[in-house]
Length: 307
Image (cartoon, rainbow, N blue to C red):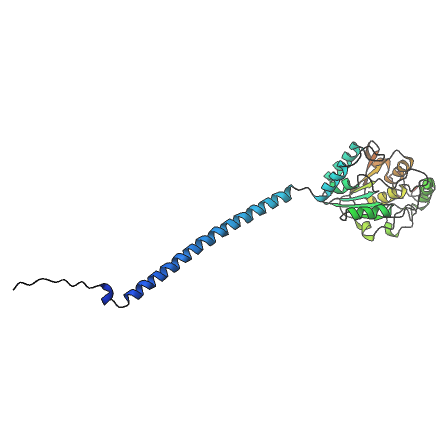
């Protein structure tokens, strides 16, 4: 009897326990892996882009900050760009350049004391940008207006009790008090010399001033405050200096006028005159550690006792 062979095909899922569940489980894990991969890729892409943007922003900000002028310099440039340069009383270009050269050579931070508010006020503050600049003027009104417009500027008003017509009376007073209240080395805060400025804030007298400019008060007529007190005070500050450089640069503007010329000779001394530029006298005055037999401001004067 002829028989026919039969093949039995067994499907794996029939005999393998949990086959359908295993396949479903694998698919879930594959989906989770794909989602994690996509999330990681997208997160890395955005993080890298944000970091790059931040770096570019920081670089641009730093470059912008570096290229910007300091505010005092910008203020000065705007001031002089919009001003009439032919007004009376302003310094000439050689005078300004001479003072600027001394400020540049000054070891930072440079201490710069200026008597008088003038057209060059903002310029001096800018040229000594990294140092300390202090302005002293007779006008409380001008000081308040300056501080209102430029709050960062340090300025003080003082009462000048002398006037131009008092010049020779004050010189006589100085000669009578040169060994006492008007001596060249002293603390001006406690001085009763008629030529001393003693009503500034206390800390001003403790500063080792490197450069002093006398360009005020006005002094253009007999009834106006002269610069006798400013020049005398500059001479004492230079000789009484404690700390800093041993020498102080003292500039006197409009030195051709009688008050400026006479007081410069008495209190800054011809021996200390370095040079003149137009109407600007430049003196270099050294500190006096020990006055010895000297009782005056200049080396030619000696003590009455030794005489």
